[in-house]
Structures are given as C-alpha cells and as structure tokens.
Length: 335
Image (cartoon, rainbow, N blue to C red; front, side):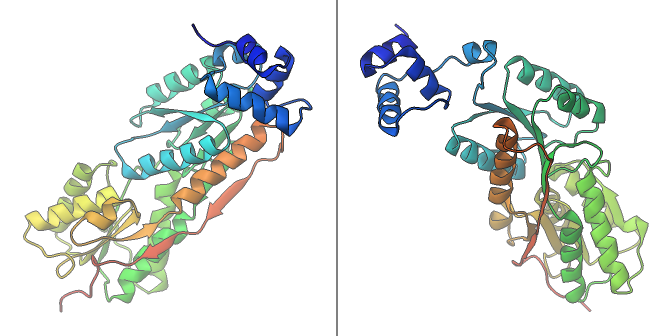
C-alpha cells in the first residue's frame, strides 16, 4: 500500500500538521524534529502528492523547461545544468523539446500550466511575445536562458553574444584572414543577430569590407551547416575562414570542406560557438566561443526560485562574458 502522511506522522510520533510543515518547508519546527521526519520519509520512500499540493494552492516543487532541440548538445548541457541546480534546491524539472515549433511550444506551456508547475524556464527562441506576456499576467514565474526578449518583463540569463561574435572574428583577423564568412542560425532570434553584429563590428574595426554574400542563414543542424558551407565554398567569392554561430554548424562546415578535399585549418579555418563536447572530439579539435553553461543554468534557477519563494519582484537581466577557447581549427591562410 502507498505510504501516506498519516503513516509518517505515526512513525515519527508527531502530528500530521508537523509532517505537513516539513513537506511544505514552513512553520516553526526544531531542526531535530524536521530531520527525524525527513529520515522516516526517506526510509518509507514517501512521495508527496504533487496533484494534492496543486489543488490546495501549494508549491509542487516542479519547474518546466522548454528547449528547442535536445539533440543539440548545447541545450542538452543547459538542461543538465538546470536540473543539477534545481535538484540541489529540492525541485524536479519537466523537460519539453519543442523542435523549434511554435505550436509545440504553446501546447507544452498549456500542459505545464495544467500540471501546476511553480515556474517555467524557456530556452527556445520564442517569437510569440503575447504568449509570454500572458504567463506574466497570470503571475506564473518565467525566466529565459540563452535567449533575449527585451519587450517582456521576465528574468533573463544569457551570454554576451555580441562580444562572442566579435571575439571569434577578431581571432581570425589576428591570424591574417580577411575573407571571413559567417554561417548563422535564424536571424529572428536575438542571439544570432547579436553574433552577426559582433562579426561586422570586428570587420569594421579592422578596416575589412563587409560582403553580404559571405553571410549564410541556416537551420540549427550539422546537415544544414554542411549545405550552407558548401554553397559558400563553391561560390564566386572565395573565403579562407568561417565563423559558425554554433558548434553544430561548425562541424557541418568541416564536413563540407573535407568533401571538397580542403584541409582544416590549412585551406579553411573554422571557429564555432558554444564549446560543447563536440568541439573536443571533432578532428581537428574546434576553436570556439565558450558559453558558461553551468553558471547560466545555476543562475536562472536561482532567479526563478527567488520569484517563486517571494524573495524579489524586480526582474533581472544577467549577461555573462563569453570566452575564446583556442584549439586546432585555425591557422594563417595560405599565401
């Protein structure tokens, strides 16, 4: 039979009210009594009813997390960092992968609300301002990670994408490259816009003309990066280096170059963005812009829990610095 709150109270020799206070982390209880009740709950494998908590308006100790694509190692690592911090704080995480579909995004948000999650963390490139504004109006705590949406009053944790694009392009310029292409994700997403803006700023600062034909917009996958790179490398205007706006696109670029019998980095230098596990196992290892994934995940959980627990009402926007990680995919161009 399923263990109930009555069984816990009887075993601990305390009232049902005391057990309830321990479960809901409230009330004045001695640390000794609290630890005793928790120990018995663990011994009896007691699981509080999330549904019952929701019906009584109490916390369910559950967060929703919307990701665009779990197959992308960057978002898998984001999910892990969020889950690690949430578990430390006594919360579970329901992970939803939207495949960059607005319809799926709306359905998942509706589902998470039905499950009475205490808050929702969003890592997708949400295009529907109204959807987020409605969640805010309903006073459901919401936070964005690795995504920016200045028009909506929510907590945000992201990397400085402009600086990341600037660092990547500047490093290629320092190595003697002038014909630098960029392969970017959906430019409707603010992070892509900012990375391209950083790329253009580095070119301008070095006195290198910007050529629109050296910019390619791609989907988020290795396959799409390979196609975009193939178009660039076969084009009329040769390039000696590519800045890819994520590691998947960078790996697609390396694959396209290899099929064209080009050597990396002798014939083509490549810089990625994210510093996922893929950057260390690709051949040659990828020079890339690192996002502080662990810190980002911990910070966004801290922010949303402060809202959930009534610790603050002001929204925060935290922009963390990126870091250039130099490996073996960049060299000086052939003369």
